[in-house]
Length: 351
Image (cartoon, rainbow, N blue to C red):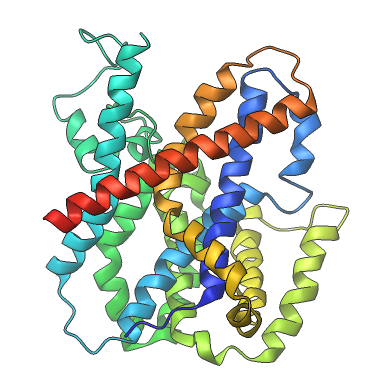
């Protein structure tokens, strides 16, 4: 049976919070409510960016969670069953949100039935990308799709990684150290030569499976050694993390090299909190509840943030007004996430 770790739920909530909080703040800038200079200190310093950390944790935890199940299970691994289970879990909620949001946009006049996607030069197969959950991700590569922005690029990237998971799982089980060494060597090379790869021209490296797959593999490796992390790793992680937080100047090196290190230190520090979290029953009940709805919250949060923030577009919002806006966004998103979870659970159970 898969062993559950409280600190991983804590990290899931932390990952969700950092991504959502960043989206809340940056949307204030996009709609002219705040200048970027007045809000940027909330989400970045010289060496850290909370959204990049949140995304890295998101992929790390995805890989770690899957590999924990593989490590603790004696059952035969069925690739077919894995794909069916995974894609039901992530695509059914996506389809529901897509249809509901499409209807919502028609109702408020932001889309027309005769030409819902405007000037996009769609291909005959464009909607297939939506059915596969890949639409928002592929738009980063200039592929015209029927994307409504649901799931953003994360979803398509995660689906592609899931397709590769059986091979990654086999490699990790054969030799976890050789796999992580090979993956790290690949990560160093892809970062060094990223700008020289023609297909990646204009593609943000932080939104590319070629980069983010390393976070997932790192999470898989951590699952294999999770009960054997030495205390020396904690004593290294704490000061290293403090350097990233407090250093007043930009540290040398490529930014994308630092992000996995930052997330690794956070993972290690939190792993040593496991015993304390075991005793914090009330706190962990809240954390576990939030973690259980994290995917549904993730699917709908950007929709709520965009439409709520538009209400204050180009207006001089006070700090109190912005706080109330944030609280309203969180409340509405929670309600929608709960409804989505209930509908999805009912449909999957019924099937």
